[in-house]
Length: 310
Image (cartoon, rainbow, N blue to C red):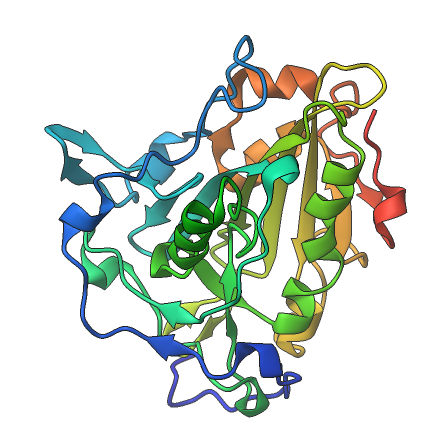
Protein backbone atom coordinates (compact mmCIF):
# COMPACT_ATOMS: atom_id res chain seq x y z
CA UNK A 1 0.00 0.00 0.00
CA UNK A 2 1.55 3.33 -1.01
CA UNK A 3 0.97 6.72 0.54
CA UNK A 4 -1.13 7.78 -2.48
CA UNK A 5 -3.44 4.79 -2.04
CA UNK A 6 -3.81 5.14 1.71
CA UNK A 7 -6.91 6.75 3.11
CA UNK A 8 -6.85 7.11 6.91
CA UNK A 9 -9.37 4.76 8.51
CA UNK A 10 -8.82 6.02 12.03
CA UNK A 11 -8.84 9.52 13.46
CA UNK A 12 -6.27 9.70 16.22
CA UNK A 13 -7.05 11.95 19.15
CA UNK A 14 -4.99 15.15 18.84
CA UNK A 15 -2.71 16.01 21.73
CA UNK A 16 -2.10 19.67 22.51
CA UNK A 17 1.16 18.64 24.18
CA UNK A 18 2.52 17.66 20.76
CA UNK A 19 1.71 20.95 19.02
CA UNK A 20 3.59 22.52 17.44
CA UNK A 21 6.26 20.03 16.44
CA UNK A 22 9.26 21.44 14.61
CA UNK A 23 11.76 19.63 12.44
CA UNK A 24 15.13 21.34 12.27
CA UNK A 25 16.21 21.60 8.64
CA UNK A 26 19.83 22.50 9.39
CA UNK A 27 21.84 19.48 10.48
CA UNK A 28 24.37 20.08 13.25
CA UNK A 29 28.03 19.18 12.68
CA UNK A 30 29.13 15.77 14.06
CA UNK A 31 31.60 17.53 16.37
CA UNK A 32 28.70 18.64 18.57
CA UNK A 33 28.30 15.03 19.70
CA UNK A 34 31.87 14.39 20.83
CA UNK A 35 30.97 14.77 24.53
CA UNK A 36 28.09 12.25 24.42
CA UNK A 37 28.96 9.15 26.44
CA UNK A 38 25.67 7.29 26.02
CA UNK A 39 24.43 4.26 27.88
CA UNK A 40 26.58 3.16 30.85
CA UNK A 41 26.91 -0.63 31.26
CA UNK A 42 27.90 -0.29 34.93
CA UNK A 43 25.22 2.23 35.86
CA UNK A 44 23.15 0.07 38.21
CA UNK A 45 25.89 -2.04 39.73
CA UNK A 46 29.58 -1.65 38.92
CA UNK A 47 30.11 -5.33 39.74
CA UNK A 48 27.47 -6.54 37.28
CA UNK A 49 27.76 -4.91 33.88
CA UNK A 50 24.57 -4.87 31.82
CA UNK A 51 25.72 -4.86 28.22
CA UNK A 52 23.87 -3.53 25.21
CA UNK A 53 21.80 -6.13 23.37
CA UNK A 54 23.74 -8.08 20.74
CA UNK A 55 22.05 -8.11 17.34
CA UNK A 56 21.50 -11.21 15.27
CA UNK A 57 23.42 -11.66 12.00
CA UNK A 58 20.37 -10.54 10.02
CA UNK A 59 19.91 -7.43 12.12
CA UNK A 60 23.62 -6.56 11.91
CA UNK A 61 23.37 -6.61 8.13
CA UNK A 62 20.71 -3.89 8.36
CA UNK A 63 22.31 -1.65 10.97
CA UNK A 64 23.45 1.91 10.19
CA UNK A 65 27.14 2.15 11.10
CA UNK A 66 29.61 5.02 10.90
CA UNK A 67 33.21 6.02 11.59
CA UNK A 68 33.64 7.66 14.98
CA UNK A 69 36.87 8.55 16.76
CA UNK A 70 38.88 6.17 14.61
CA UNK A 71 36.52 3.19 14.95
CA UNK A 72 33.57 1.73 13.11
CA UNK A 73 30.47 1.56 15.30
CA UNK A 74 26.69 1.28 15.02
CA UNK A 75 25.91 2.70 18.48
CA UNK A 76 24.78 6.32 18.59
CA UNK A 77 25.55 7.82 22.00
CA UNK A 78 23.60 10.67 23.57
CA UNK A 79 23.28 12.00 27.12
CA UNK A 80 22.44 8.99 29.34
CA UNK A 81 21.16 6.86 26.45
CA UNK A 82 22.17 5.23 23.16
CA UNK A 83 20.34 3.99 20.07
CA UNK A 84 20.97 1.62 17.16
CA UNK A 85 19.24 2.34 13.83
CA UNK A 86 17.82 0.11 11.10
CA UNK A 87 18.71 1.27 7.58
CA UNK A 88 15.73 -0.40 5.90
CA UNK A 89 13.11 0.68 8.45
CA UNK A 90 14.54 4.17 9.12
CA UNK A 91 13.96 3.94 12.86
CA UNK A 92 15.72 2.53 15.93
CA UNK A 93 16.19 -1.20 16.36
CA UNK A 94 16.46 -0.39 20.04
CA UNK A 95 17.36 2.31 22.55
CA UNK A 96 19.14 1.83 25.89
CA UNK A 97 18.74 4.35 28.69
CA UNK A 98 20.02 4.83 32.24
CA UNK A 99 17.53 6.46 34.64
CA UNK A 100 18.49 7.92 38.02
CA UNK A 101 15.28 8.59 39.92
CA UNK A 102 17.12 10.27 42.81
CA UNK A 103 18.55 13.10 40.69
CA UNK A 104 15.79 13.47 38.12
CA UNK A 105 15.07 17.03 36.89
CA UNK A 106 11.79 18.32 35.46
CA UNK A 107 12.68 19.83 32.07
CA UNK A 108 10.23 21.92 30.04
CA UNK A 109 9.28 20.18 26.79
CA UNK A 110 10.62 21.70 23.56
CA UNK A 111 9.67 19.72 20.46
CA UNK A 112 12.67 20.51 18.29
CA UNK A 113 13.19 17.37 16.21
CA UNK A 114 16.45 16.89 14.35
CA UNK A 115 18.55 14.48 12.30
CA UNK A 116 21.75 12.94 13.60
CA UNK A 117 24.71 13.96 11.40
CA UNK A 118 26.73 10.85 12.25
CA UNK A 119 24.69 8.58 9.97
CA UNK A 120 23.15 9.23 6.57
CA UNK A 121 19.86 11.16 6.53
CA UNK A 122 18.42 8.50 4.19
CA UNK A 123 18.30 6.14 7.19
CA UNK A 124 16.31 8.62 9.29
CA UNK A 125 12.68 9.73 9.08
CA UNK A 126 10.97 12.75 10.62
CA UNK A 127 8.24 13.38 8.05
CA UNK A 128 6.56 10.59 6.02
CA UNK A 129 4.10 8.98 8.49
CA UNK A 130 4.37 11.82 11.01
CA UNK A 131 1.92 14.67 11.15
CA UNK A 132 -1.38 15.92 12.48
CA UNK A 133 -3.06 13.05 14.29
CA UNK A 134 -6.49 14.45 13.42
CA UNK A 135 -5.67 13.56 9.80
CA UNK A 136 -4.70 10.01 10.67
CA UNK A 137 -0.95 10.42 10.88
CA UNK A 138 1.33 9.14 13.64
CA UNK A 139 3.21 10.85 16.43
CA UNK A 140 6.97 10.53 16.67
CA UNK A 141 7.10 8.00 19.47
CA UNK A 142 10.20 8.29 21.63
CA UNK A 143 11.91 4.93 22.17
CA UNK A 144 13.86 6.40 25.07
CA UNK A 145 11.12 8.44 26.69
CA UNK A 146 11.63 12.19 26.70
CA UNK A 147 11.99 12.56 30.46
CA UNK A 148 13.88 9.34 31.20
CA UNK A 149 17.44 10.66 30.75
CA UNK A 150 16.64 14.03 32.38
CA UNK A 151 18.84 13.79 35.47
CA UNK A 152 22.24 14.88 36.81
CA UNK A 153 21.76 18.67 37.07
CA UNK A 154 19.72 21.21 35.12
CA UNK A 155 22.12 21.76 32.21
CA UNK A 156 22.85 18.08 31.73
CA UNK A 157 19.16 17.17 32.02
CA UNK A 158 18.18 19.85 29.49
CA UNK A 159 20.69 18.52 26.96
CA UNK A 160 19.52 14.94 27.59
CA UNK A 161 15.94 16.04 26.98
CA UNK A 162 16.92 17.69 23.69
CA UNK A 163 18.81 14.57 22.63
CA UNK A 164 15.64 12.47 22.81
CA UNK A 165 14.25 14.53 19.92
CA UNK A 166 16.38 12.83 17.28
CA UNK A 167 15.02 10.85 14.34
CA UNK A 168 17.25 8.04 15.59
CA UNK A 169 15.05 7.79 18.70
CA UNK A 170 11.64 7.92 17.00
CA UNK A 171 9.19 5.32 15.69
CA UNK A 172 5.59 5.79 14.44
CA UNK A 173 3.17 5.43 17.33
CA UNK A 174 -0.43 6.30 18.03
CA UNK A 175 -0.33 8.77 20.91
CA UNK A 176 -3.04 6.99 22.89
CA UNK A 177 -0.82 3.88 22.86
CA UNK A 178 2.35 5.79 23.68
CA UNK A 179 0.75 7.71 26.54
CA UNK A 180 -1.17 4.87 28.20
CA UNK A 181 -0.06 1.91 30.29
CA UNK A 182 3.03 1.49 28.08
CA UNK A 183 4.32 4.84 29.29
CA UNK A 184 3.71 4.04 32.97
CA UNK A 185 5.65 0.77 33.23
CA UNK A 186 9.05 2.37 33.82
CA UNK A 187 7.65 4.72 36.48
CA UNK A 188 6.10 1.79 38.32
CA UNK A 189 9.31 -0.24 38.32
CA UNK A 190 11.33 2.76 39.47
CA UNK A 191 8.97 3.31 42.41
CA UNK A 192 9.39 -0.31 43.44
CA UNK A 193 13.14 -0.68 43.06
CA UNK A 194 15.74 -0.44 45.83
CA UNK A 195 15.26 2.95 47.50
CA UNK A 196 19.00 3.18 48.21
CA UNK A 197 19.75 2.71 44.50
CA UNK A 198 16.91 4.35 42.58
CA UNK A 199 18.42 3.44 39.25
CA UNK A 200 17.07 1.40 36.37
CA UNK A 201 18.25 0.67 32.85
CA UNK A 202 15.62 0.46 30.12
CA UNK A 203 15.87 -1.11 26.68
CA UNK A 204 13.07 -0.39 24.20
CA UNK A 205 12.43 -1.10 20.55
CA UNK A 206 9.97 -2.02 17.81
CA UNK A 207 9.35 -5.56 16.61
CA UNK A 208 9.96 -5.68 12.87
CA UNK A 209 7.68 -8.08 11.03
CA UNK A 210 7.43 -8.64 7.29
CA UNK A 211 3.65 -8.32 7.58
CA UNK A 212 3.76 -4.84 9.14
CA UNK A 213 1.46 -2.54 7.15
CA UNK A 214 3.02 0.00 4.80
CA UNK A 215 1.55 3.46 5.30
CA UNK A 216 2.92 6.75 3.99
CA UNK A 217 5.75 4.82 2.27
CA UNK A 218 6.99 3.37 5.55
CA UNK A 219 6.38 0.06 7.28
CA UNK A 220 4.65 0.71 10.62
CA UNK A 221 5.61 -1.60 13.51
CA UNK A 222 2.54 -2.97 15.26
CA UNK A 223 4.40 -4.27 18.31
CA UNK A 224 7.02 -2.89 20.67
CA UNK A 225 9.13 -4.47 23.39
CA UNK A 226 10.64 -3.17 26.61
CA UNK A 227 13.13 -4.68 29.08
CA UNK A 228 13.91 -3.09 32.46
CA UNK A 229 16.83 -3.95 34.76
CA UNK A 230 16.75 -2.86 38.41
CA UNK A 231 17.78 -3.74 41.96
CA UNK A 232 14.86 -5.36 43.76
CA UNK A 233 13.73 -3.47 46.87
CA UNK A 234 13.32 -6.60 49.00
CA UNK A 235 16.08 -8.96 47.88
CA UNK A 236 18.59 -6.20 46.98
CA UNK A 237 19.55 -8.25 43.93
CA UNK A 238 19.50 -7.52 40.22
CA UNK A 239 16.23 -8.29 38.46
CA UNK A 240 14.97 -7.90 34.89
CA UNK A 241 11.46 -7.79 33.46
CA UNK A 242 10.29 -7.84 29.85
CA UNK A 243 7.16 -6.57 28.13
CA UNK A 244 5.54 -6.68 24.69
CA UNK A 245 2.76 -4.36 23.60
CA UNK A 246 0.64 -3.92 20.47
CA UNK A 247 -0.77 -0.80 18.83
CA UNK A 248 -2.56 -2.85 16.17
CA UNK A 249 -6.03 -1.96 17.44
CA UNK A 250 -5.22 1.74 17.51
CA UNK A 251 -3.87 1.70 13.95
CA UNK A 252 -7.46 1.27 12.89
CA UNK A 253 -8.38 -2.13 11.61
CA UNK A 254 -5.48 -2.64 9.21
CA UNK A 255 -4.80 -5.88 11.07
CA UNK A 256 -7.93 -7.84 12.02
CA UNK A 257 -6.22 -9.77 14.82
CA UNK A 258 -3.35 -9.30 17.21
CA UNK A 259 -0.16 -11.21 16.63
CA UNK A 260 -0.09 -12.52 20.20
CA UNK A 261 -3.71 -12.55 21.31
CA UNK A 262 -6.37 -10.15 22.42
CA UNK A 263 -4.38 -8.31 25.10
CA UNK A 264 -2.63 -5.07 24.26
CA UNK A 265 0.07 -5.33 26.94
CA UNK A 266 1.85 -8.43 28.21
CA UNK A 267 4.75 -9.33 30.47
CA UNK A 268 6.97 -11.83 28.64
CA UNK A 269 10.19 -13.74 29.35
CA UNK A 270 13.31 -12.08 27.98
CA UNK A 271 13.84 -15.21 25.86
CA UNK A 272 10.60 -14.48 24.02
CA UNK A 273 11.64 -10.89 23.34
CA UNK A 274 15.02 -12.07 22.08
CA UNK A 275 13.25 -14.25 19.52
CA UNK A 276 10.83 -11.52 18.45
CA UNK A 277 13.43 -8.74 18.20
CA UNK A 278 16.27 -10.96 16.89
CA UNK A 279 18.83 -9.95 19.47
CA UNK A 280 20.37 -11.25 22.69
CA UNK A 281 20.42 -9.78 26.20
CA UNK A 282 23.35 -11.97 27.23
CA UNK A 283 23.81 -12.46 30.96
CA UNK A 284 20.84 -10.23 31.79
CA UNK A 285 18.51 -13.07 30.85
CA UNK A 286 19.67 -15.01 33.95
CA UNK A 287 18.15 -12.26 36.14
CA UNK A 288 14.74 -12.39 34.46
CA UNK A 289 11.89 -12.81 36.96
CA UNK A 290 10.28 -15.11 34.38
CA UNK A 291 13.45 -17.08 33.71
CA UNK A 292 11.77 -20.38 34.61
CA UNK A 293 8.77 -19.73 32.37
CA UNK A 294 8.55 -21.12 28.86
CA UNK A 295 9.26 -18.82 25.93
CA UNK A 296 5.55 -18.86 25.02
CA UNK A 297 4.45 -17.65 28.47
CA UNK A 298 2.55 -14.34 28.50
CA UNK A 299 0.87 -12.56 31.38
CA UNK A 300 -1.75 -9.97 30.42
CA UNK A 301 -1.32 -6.49 31.89
CA UNK A 302 -4.44 -4.44 32.52
CA UNK A 303 -2.74 -2.23 35.10
CA UNK A 304 0.83 -1.67 36.34
CA UNK A 305 -0.12 -3.58 39.52
CA UNK A 306 -0.28 -6.73 37.37
CA UNK A 307 3.50 -6.54 36.82
CA UNK A 308 5.58 -9.29 38.43
CA UNK A 309 8.80 -7.83 39.86
CA UNK A 310 10.12 -10.87 41.72
